[in-house]
Length: 165
Image (cartoon, rainbow, N blue to C red; front, side):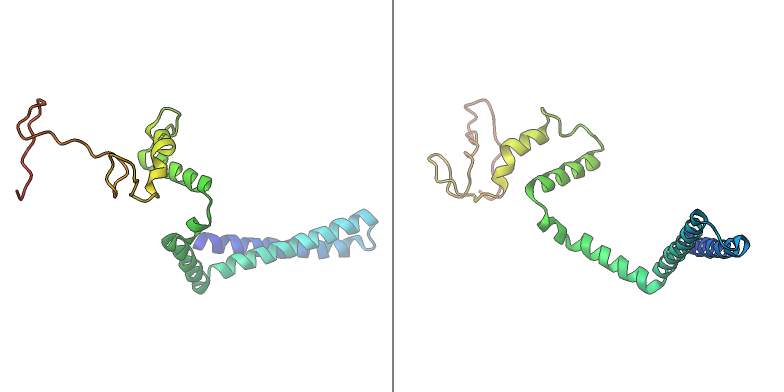
């Protein structure tokens, strides 16, 4: 907060200094040559630009402006409306970058990774309806149900009894 205010004041002071130096040189030189007149005008314009930039920095430090921008940024981050405006490739890149940050690794998207397998083989099923209508599949589940071992353990696996039965 104080840093931006200091930068703003510094820019305003530098701008005023540039304008004063321009006026002082204009008085000292008298009737300047063509190239000197251009340089003095440029110094004058740079001074005005520095004053404007410094003024904007100072204005942004006022609490009302600061609160306004904080609320707008919070609205963007919390509501996440910007995600709806992104296309599929941008969303996949965002998801990949989020996973890289989460797992703290940069090679999570290599060719033989689970993420690559997920994007190429599983990702399409997430938004699809659960009904497949194929033989051997339940109507509300697109993948074959895993076989439960029998209670007798004929296949060498003894399963625990289900609760409530």
